[in-house]
View: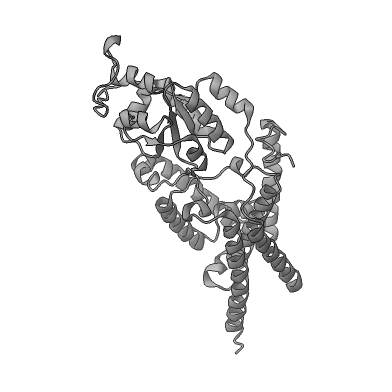
Length: 180
Length: 202
């Protein structure tokens, strides 16, 4: 019995020592196309600008807001709390698994591409701002304005509406995201 | 090699089959706990007095086996570790919960799983422990609204030990296995010393 125990301990130590040499496990992550197709179909990959503004005004923790536009555009105006990140830099980032990542670009194409790339890296809590910065300006910054006055003149003078419309389906979507 | 584990996530079987698999895994788990002597409150409580460290050895054997299995299966590309379910970490409430759990364990002689094992072999103390556990669960459910802030405090999310301290997984594997093997050696010596003390040997 003692010999068996000793042999098993030696085997475990050898496998552990080999792990040192082998390096980290390959990190090959498979993407489940059905799950992502479901999310896209049901717009569960999107974050509504109003919901984002609610998150920002309530100082919600555990989410990172990433601006994928150019440095000049970022300097001109960015959503409060956003981090400027170019796509190659984003691919090098190590996010915590429990962090929610919200991406935005000018419209939506660039953030959708970045979202797909992050999904393939195993980050599931990644969402794109629906309509990009343009929708943010229209739905949050200039809510109720006439179309002629839409572009912001004072970049950081964000006025988040005090009372935001309750959207019960968003809570459901959030629950679904957590379960995924 | 194509990734095909976890089997449920990759659609190898559906929800119905997963219940059947879970049933047999549960039966196997209970069987091996019982065979390891975990149906005896005396044996389980003996670990707190350092006279029998079987629980420590069985648990660490399971940890090391699973750790090496998960690491190497993932390394060869059979298992997608990102799809393995992790329980979220809440260090403070979990530490308090662990303390309460330990007090219950040393007082009653069982943990929840071993109480089931003991009652399945007809042990009365196992049944009493299960009754206490069920009462505790009901009470906890009643006072939960008052505890929710503490319950959700210090949330770290689904992190591994390596993620939390920023150490690569392969180094963590090595460190934990070395500690476990040293722990086994130390446990054997402690047991020998306790046995000598009990028998009055020098």
